[in-house]
Amino acid sequence: MSKEDNKVKDASQMTWHQITTEKSDRRDAIKKLTAGLIAGVGLASTSCSVFSDDQEKEISQLTWDEFFKKNYKIMSDEERIQTVQRLEALYEKKTGNTINMSHQGPIEDVLFGYAFNISKCQGYMDCVNACIEENNQDRNSEMQYIRIHQIEKGHGFNFEKADDNYTNQVPAENHFYIGTQCFHCENPPCVNVCPTEATWKEKDGIVVVDYDWCIGCRYCLASCPYDGRRFNWSQPHVPEDEVNKNQHYLGNRMRKKGVMEKCTFCIQRSRNGNNPACVEACPTGARKFGNLLDPKSEIRWILENKKVFRLKEDLGTEPKFWYYMD
Image (cartoon, rainbow, N blue to C red; front, side, top):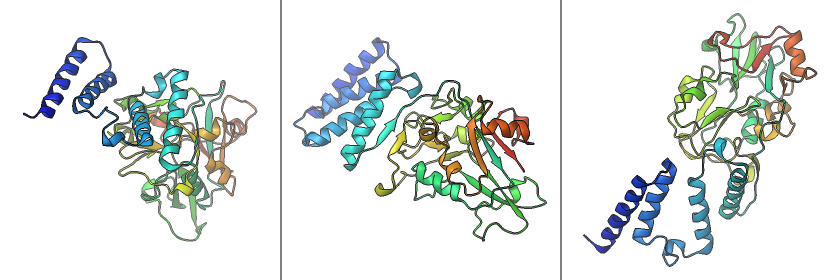
């Protein structure tokens, strides 16, 4: 056995002994073990070629700290600030450009809800395109959070007979259009099945994902009855000049291969008092969004004055997404 092999073995044994005799959580244990291995082969030395460049060394340290951070929902306010600052720094060092990342939490006395006017939707897809651009969705796979279903009149809301990839001129004669996306359920089945607690419901009703804690098992995808989840089979790509640099940690920040993502009601916009991008882009006014707890909000007026319904209400998921007609 070579001297280098002995160093790795000794470091591994020493670190494993420390791990088994000290109380630590999963990530602490991995961190200690990895640190011991790195020390054993001399990678921690600044004289090693991998760290010969100061900027590359700083990127490596930032990446290291980023990997071993806590789940977002159990971070302290200070840790959340440090996390977004670290991600901003990493982006700048890797691309030479800056981003503005928020970690803004739920607003007091706000519960977001959405309503979709089937009578007004004409199938123009402006909402889909706006969502892609706003939320930095992968261009290579043509990922889309929103689905617009073209259904022939007389088939009711039978999505098995819907055309989700229509290329005809719209609105098509004798057809209607209905949109689906994440419905931000009050009782979200996707949250219950996640083994790492990488997804949860916030106080304002938005169901979010901590992408760095998602292990890509896709249990949430399988459990969602509304086809609201998307999986990154490859590294997402967005041209640098198309990246939306106004981001939220739990929303439209850049994702990676092997994780789930979904609509977040444009958390980076909604928590700043703005409508989601799809609502703003809709040319017919078919999409409505607002605070369900505000009796003067438009969405409350719709729920109280229109005949509304939700998909698969019998499942008890209580989606905060309603449909109605004029």
